[in-house]
Image (cartoon, rainbow, N blue to C red):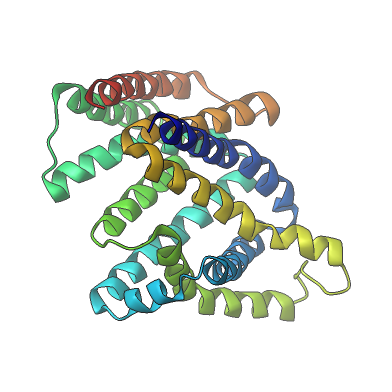
Amino acid sequence: MNKEFNKGLFLAGFGSFWWGFFGVLYFKYITFIGHIELVVHRCLWTTFTLILTTFFFSKWNIFFTIIKSKKNLLYLFLSGFLIFINWAIWIYAIATNRIIDASFGYFMMPILSVMLGYIFFKEELNKKRILSIILVVISILYLLLISFKSLPWVGIIVALSWGFYNLVRKKINVDTDVGLLIESLYILPFALIAFYIIAENGYNDFQISNPPMMLLIFLAGPMTVIPLFLYVRGVELCGLGATGMIFYITPTLQFILGYFYYDEPFSMEKLVSFIFIWIAVIIYLKDLHETN
């Protein structure tokens, strides 16, 4: 039991580290192709990678079972739209030097999920979680009152899209990776049309004449899927409580890279706002530790 738990912690930790470190470095590096083309390729090659993994893990029977349900298809269409928004806005943040703002969203996302769970699933809230939610609201209101321009809209959209994505996926009980494949298949026709338009206008960097570039761009798929598999497997082995704490590796690394490595601006107003968020996170993590 202890061995499995430790393995789960390692896998969830590595998945979170991958998202926060390798993911940022890779997608930041490849933004020279343009964030629109990068979003398109992320959608295309994530779908392709998930098709391969579904074959490899022999999950097509699960796939066909899921798509037999109209309810599943409807919810996965909605969650597919939300995950597309999350991917697109995150890549936009990476490309436009807003990594710190994106990290703001991932810091507040688990606390937002607690609030959504209360609203939509009537999940219980204790005093510490209520306080965490209040501090997140204060953080946002503070920036609104001090300077509308300082509000990290990118981070808020990242948090809302991911929070509501998890909410929708909680409505149905489907395998994470197979569900993501179906979501990706919904996005695929639009990605193919966008890819065609980009190629027709001569803006496509994914060309047969440049195999190294093709491979570099193709990695957008595995770079999306691998940390997902690691983190989900970690959740399966040691539960949501422990992995919920470990997840904060991701926004912490994003913040560190944004501030120290990419030299993104960080105003005093945002620092005060982040302090509110960090206090909320500490209270939330302490509550997770006490209840698990």
